[in-house]
Length: 261
Image (tube, rainbow, N blue to C red; front, side):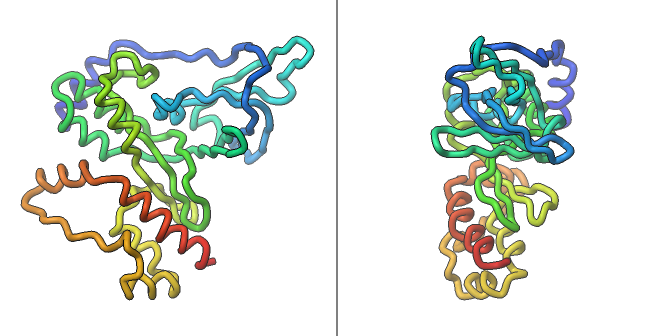
């Protein structure tokens, strides 16, 4: 891993600098809000940086035009660009559905390790660096409550992770279809959500602890992994299906948030 990071570090020869302001047409923009570092909610229009083909880009930055920066007569809006160090949260309406993204501190170790499994040489180093170096990023809220759960995507091999160009279709598909799920309990540190962690974080509530003890949560009935060595264990962890984790969220975490106040 150290070798991969060194390759990436010395191979990183350019930085991508974003413009802070730009003006665009107002019609057709999506409404939403941002919450600044002081906790102030500001409503306006939001433009996502990513798309369904590159959802990891939404974790890097967002463009926002405050209501005061909208000129409906001229059909213009002035956008400003923000990253996770600038604001606490942003929300955008997709139809009638609000999508909420919050700033979190988290490094995607799973995807960094996966770089050594799916890539080699310089590309593996870039990919590991992309995932380990991004400690402050936006993550989309999956469920709210005492236990917050977020969906976060790994970053591709591309150095800046700002373009789908140059990314293989196989890699792009794998990243889109296999997001990571992380949690934060009562505002604590964001960590990877696993069945083992879920058992610990719901044990302080008699209601969920009793159901867990009785084996009523199907998503917690996972077979124990056979650990035949560190390398085998890492590969098993990397390829572990996130479908089970989504079931874990919908069944266990939702039950905890609804019944353990």
